[in-house]
Amino acid sequence: MKLSVVGPTHPFRGGISHYTSLLVRTLRSRYDVQFISYSRQYPAWLYPGNNDRDPSSSLLVHESPDREFDALNPWAWGGIAHRIVEHESQLVILPWSVFYWTPYYFLFLKALRKVTEATALFICHNVVEHESSWLKSSVSKRVLKMGDVFITHSQWDKANLQRWIGDSRSDQIWVNPHPVYQHLCQQALLTKAEARERLGLRTERVLLFFGFIREYKGLRYLLESLPYILKHYPVHLIIAGEVWEQKKIYNNLIRDLNLQNNVTFAHHYIPNEEVESYFAAADLVVIPYTSATQSGVVQLAFGFGKPVVVGKVGGLMEVVEDQRNGYLVRPRDPRAIADAVLDFYDQNRENEMIQNITSGLSRFSWQRMVETIQKVMVQCRKDDSREDVISSMDWSGR
Image (cartoon, rainbow, N blue to C red):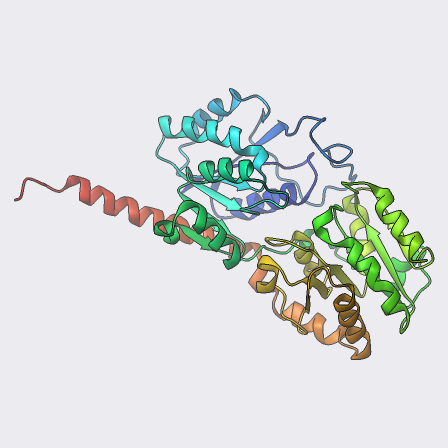
């Protein structure tokens, strides 16, 4: 079986780039995989952060693409369709995450259909993006319908996709949990004491908020929960991630709540070599999203063996088991966040939760993800065989 994967890898940063690289690495252990990546991904004026390039000096994971092309050039996508024909790929894998890619995928899939019968598989990170609109949803729906088969990371998102492409296509949608990001853990994991020393922390209890900071991620509600927590425990919150909105909103909130001595705000993209220090230093990772399909930060936390507090939204409820590997809390509720943190410390749940995370990691393995892709391919071959039989039948009545 020959496959082609089209998506980002180094030097582009972010979860989708890491995800695609790890997926290709695992697929290459079983299949002949052609990996096609980008030389350019987003125009500079459109990207909300400083830029889309990874500043890390340590790659930790890198899969060399067989070909790179300028993804901003609409005509280049037609050439990629011909590369897939040359490779004789039977399956083409595309990551689906944001509306931005719709015109490019439309052109690519139109070109692909003209030159090959290869199956197009969308791996859906978010069916409906976080800052959606009628226009985005309408156009995204049209392009997604051009896919042949789909993998979502939750039953919740499968239901979203079904509403868009039709219930009659339900058997073309497969569900596999988002795999963990264990590649960012070094072989010799830092102890809490070592990590806290690196970060200059002198405190017994540490919470972590990690990742790009956007309104739907609910950071303001975590900050508003701290005064409740501080009445019982002297905790320290680390906020680590690039701000994709106005930073002063959070600086003002920290000042107004008098939290200056209880918060470390690392408001920049965290390179690979520094990620371990932040997670190793933390007792609990707080991810108070107000809306979500799933979260790569949850899988990053699990990869480091860290329990989580998450908003009870979207597909997160299928990944986090309340009071086993973390907590599910009401969204936009600072007191609910505080109650979860206090229960964690009051009941000394850390060791038990770490054991539960470790025992459940096989559910989130990359091998399991590849096995799901393999099942998709087997099903596609069966369907193709059935169509061949039907098309060869004599329909004259004999």
